Amino acid sequence: MKRRKIAWKGRACLGAMLLSLLVGCGNQSPLDPKNPVSLTVWHYYNGSQEAAFDTLVEKFNDSVGRELGIYVQSYSQGSVPDLESAVRDAINGKVGADPMPDIFSSYADTAYEIEQAGALADLGGYLSQEELAVYVDSYIEEGRIASDGGLRIFPTAKSTEIMMLNQTDWEPFAAAAGVSLEDLKTIEGVAATAEAYYQWTDSLTPDVPGDGKALYGRDAVANYFIIGMQQLGVELFQVENGQMTLNVPQEPLRRLWENYYVPMVKGYFGALGSFRSDDVKTGDILAYTGSTASAMYFPDQVELDSGSHAIDYLVLPAPIFEGGANYAVQQGAGMVVSKSDQQHEYAAVEFLKWFTQAENNLQFGCVSGYLPVRKEAGSIEKLDQVVAEQGLTVSPKTYDCLTTLFGQMETMTLYTNKSFQNGSAARKVLEYHLADQAAADRAAVAAAVAQGTSLEEAAAPYVSSEAFANWYASFCDALNAAISG
Image: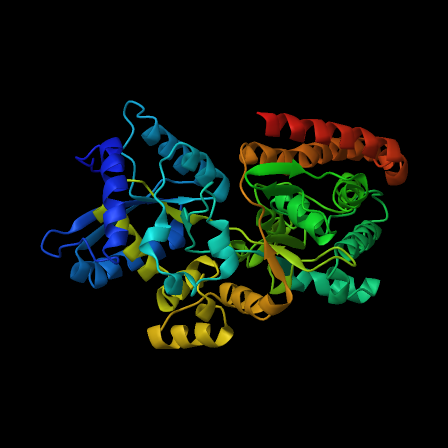
């Protein structure tokens, strides 16, 4: 990676002075096409997503970038943790670290941490109210992570959750058990249907008791907590004026525990591979809740020890709690701009505005499965128009995923909690505390069943009120420890 000649800290001081001049001059362009500004972008895209992003960067450089005097170079850092590590190394001046990039992908919790170090540019000075108004309001609000209310995260690609189902193997079970897709609309319905599936698959091998299979799994258990509580009327992390209040009432958390931990311990739900799409491929589950961006990874066939067979799929809305409000997670990294100088910050925003134009954003979304961020782009009609005009080839899974969501956007509320200090640590507790315990306890239950104990008898100590009370106390302690740092 090429190293920039101007030190980041020096550019930060210069940028603070020149930004006020920029705003005072009515956003006049500080760019000179004869002396183009070079921008470095770090991201975590890989495979087809990286190729799609690089194609758009090249398109920008050859058109608007050439006209304005901006040249963009993009680099994948491999993964989200690798990217976050590289950014921290750059900020801290670690020996051997690359200079701070001009733009980089960031989730809100990480951006909040970097903002506390004073390393992010305030993008509001480069965008008029009219320009901000074209973006989905909640996406802009998510980017206002600074104490001054300024915009630090530019929304570039968002996602939410859907349910993906192996339709081929679902249909014989549904016919035999008398269940339907309607049963998968609520979280309680999924749990009940998963129990029926376990019993049905167990009955197929009467000579081997207790070998039923799981129906369902989910990625991102943290989302299950945050959105599940929101559906039940409780904001888990309530942030006002920079202060976070933790809300952990027992009753709604008991519902979450009963509809995730209990089915996991009994084998009705499963989580074996790195992602639940892996578990569908190995035939360990039939359905999962995951990010829209995961649709492209849903397998075309199931591979068993006895052989493989092709499968069809269905894209369904993510289930919600029975009687709960229709909240869905708002997620996906945006782009942040390093605090530097007038030219680089202005140029960075110009690139991000171009990237998020409907035709460009949808072109990226057609490959990545991410949702576009402008209001005008979030419709089936606009998607079809861009696909036709640009001659795009869209994976049927990705297309079905996007159109399913576009069709329900008006009836659901997207939600993400506001950022707060130690938010990343708190989210890790949500992600792993219950899931790790469920995995360990499921192993113990399965071992007892293998020795001849009935499933109900083996699971009884783990699914009692006392077991919930013990978990609840441990969970609250872990959250409070994470939040306090």
